[in-house]
Image (cartoon, rainbow, N blue to C red):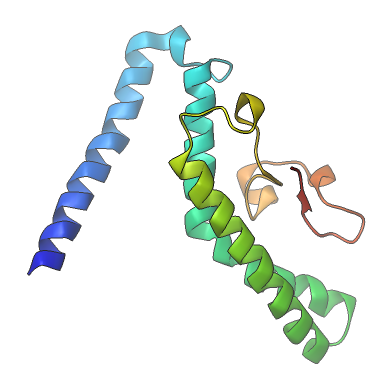
Length: 140
């Protein structure tokens, strides 16, 4: 019973936050543009939540990448191990960015990982953030 109550309260709080952000942005226009500190905080929070909840996408992505480089068995084993490592890193970075979104760490709210999201072609990052083997780069 307590778990249901907690889930209901968490859902109401999340819905309130999600609905309040666009209303604030519409009301104050120029203050909430991407270049402002508040806009950068929002971007960092969104990036953190995206990485936190979609970081596991790194596992099939790396299996697919390694499969194309070698044979299927090696691709599944090597890609799976790489994918688990990248997924754990991405989820940890997402949790860190979600918790610290109001603080400009690293400087100017820059991302800790490149690309910012696990699927750059879906979320709009450019491919130069990959190294020549097609693996994402860490920037620290």
